[in-house]
Image 1: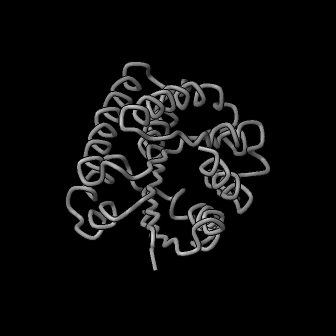
Image 2: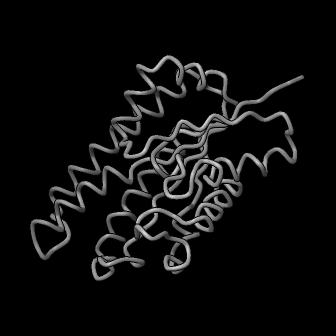
Length: 211
């Protein structure tokens, strides 16, 4: 019996925060894939709060994850939200203006360097796996900081441009999660005003299936 491995890497969006693993987007996506690959195995190693730096450390130092990467025929990644979240929180605490352009530039440059290292590490371990990388969505329209959503969107748009370049450089496909959520935040984001609800995770799975 031939088995293929789908490895889901990333942060709380991959882990399924707020709804549980069974309703996470990798579980939903794997169910879709099993229509054509009934023997597909899923390894969801999403970690709540994971940053780009944290993912790089896992890829370099965690032998179990390195083995999964080596064996995988499909790898999905959601990462970057927590890097930006820390920046946004600091900005909201410090001033009425949501971001300092110089500090934003430093944050994005740091993210860019780290995601490049992530891409290099994955391709060093497994040059052939199908790689799908999710964009970031803007949760602010659904919550108490909605008045800052326009400024936040500018930041997220820049990060998503970086993700698209990264994906292309390492032979990946972009899953446009942001397009699934824009204008539908009230319907797709859960009670914490940050993570998706069940329907939101279904939309993310759809974005990955289209990538």
